[in-house]
Length: 420
Image (cartoon, rainbow, N blue to C red; front, side, top):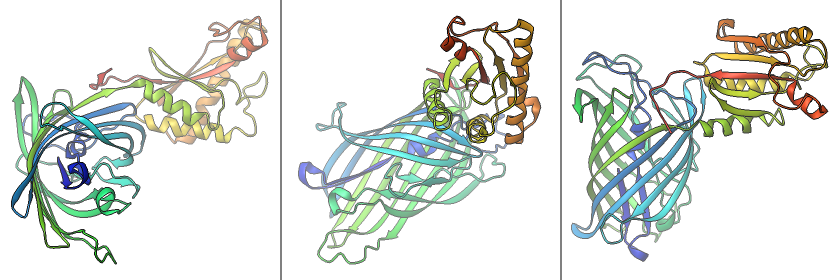
């Protein structure tokens, strides 16, 4: 993790926060190794996973080989997985840059960076050009095959730098880079099984700006970092990281700035179901106004009411396609989970008739979902409760309307991820 600062007002005209810990953190949901056997690395994604990345940086800045400044920094990332689509996950959140004014353990927030990007199971990014964070992208990127202890591999990468304050360049400046990896094996730290991977990263790039006569700009960037990442194999979660770095900026006026130092960091991974609930409800409400999403003991409950059905029937309305497609779009984010569909009625009419109607409606929803999801019917079960489980007063029309409903439950699965 590096932060490059150019001298200016308040001793800072620009900060370029490189949160390499986050780049590796999203890998740490891999399956556990068996001793020192080979491993196929994949990112594991699940909606609701939250990453808190904390990293501390001690850095020296040289101008023309003369020490100009010492800085002590802290970087914090709060990133949430809000959606999973096939082999990609949508990450949303904020990166914060903090600085110690007196080189103590007290830090002041100087800037926050919102971010939103997709990342696939191999580590490759899809991110809009307007986002400055994360700076380092496509690191780590993993091969599709098995990796054995001692194996090495390489991949391309790039950095996106923030030159707005110092140079007036409004968009991120992209620097291509090359990363080399080696799987070092397993060890124990504080009684926990840990896997280690070294990452060596090199930049050697001449920048192109077009017409910029008379404006001080970085002309060439040369540098490296060496990192050691530790995986907690018992929890399938990140453990810690250490890094040293040295970067040289050759400026357009011939001056040379050098940034050298070391950093360390940790990642805390939690699961925040309430964030998943909010995300699902927001997405479903675009097509099904009034849908209710809640967390129950069995999992995530989606109450779609009875709006999909004709009155007193299990026949779907003629315009229910968009609603069903919207539900399927959400369920695809939970492709490894089982689904349960439950039908309910109000208390009007014979009890046995209501039970039969609730079963027929639940079964009809299952048929529609399975057809649209192209998945096995074994994954989706259904049942009818008739009038036996009201959620409102059956003596009022509004209460009866609420009781006539179909519920879809995304069932829980056992997870190693820490619950908040």
